[in-house]
Image (cartoon, rainbow, N blue to C red; front, side, top):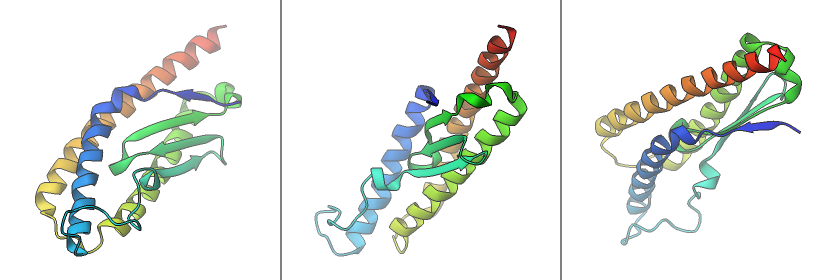
Length: 152
């Protein structure tokens, strides 16, 4: 069974991303004529907005929430002997695939929404920077754990 890495250091980024998604979803609902801003039953839920991707032929699985914030990462234990360079490549592959999946889902939801794209872009850049810093920290932690395992 694969072990998961807890991306809890990204919780603030995730919260900000969910707030932004809520704003964008509200704009879509308002545009579709829903006077109270409530999304209709056909609008996707937050769970449906999760992006998923794999790397290393499925040995690494990543899941990202709204706007690419890493939500979960699962690495097959058989990779522990592959070394940190290989693991890092597979992790990046999986995360990038998950982010692309999430972007495609988000594009479907926000298509045609009238939002202040400049302000939204600026906010998303900040969230992305926070998520990137958290991801780098997680990779460093993974590297340290792998080195400890190699010493045993």
